[in-house]
Length: 202
Image (cartoon, rainbow, N blue to C red; front, side, top):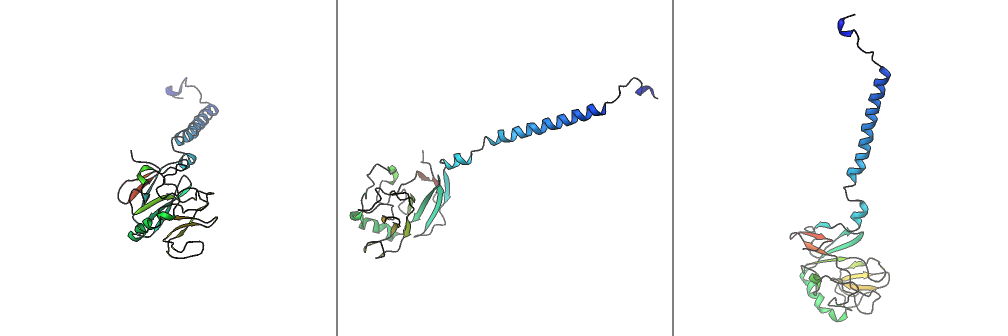
């Protein structure tokens, strides 16, 4: 036996195994606690559904076309109107229940208090939910007489559930079950081709 080993304590292998196991389990426990802690900084799905703004690229919407996105669980219509469709809006004001969006049950944002109900005349951005019982109206863009539509129809939306009709600015026609125009969500343009839905520009 050498001098280096004289008087050295005997190694307790069972104690060493216990210490290693305890340290490993402690590290795993700390990691398990850290994961939900770090995750708590991320917005929950509930928080996102409650109103997180949505940025939308509208460069792919052709004139006369429509794009649908979701915000707060609601369908948001982005309609790109042609010059002819914009001109037709003025022709039907006498047939509308609230052509100037003056009713206050569903207030229209100040920047949409105009004949086209939008920031940019070309684009209509509205919530695609009928103000009667919450159905989603269908597209009826083709002008002219059609079932459930007037003979002077110039294009718009029809809620087939109860017959409410809306023009291409989301304005409801007279003598229909829907009490108000379609709602305009808060929004602003980030650029010529990108719109932020769910927030208003400061």
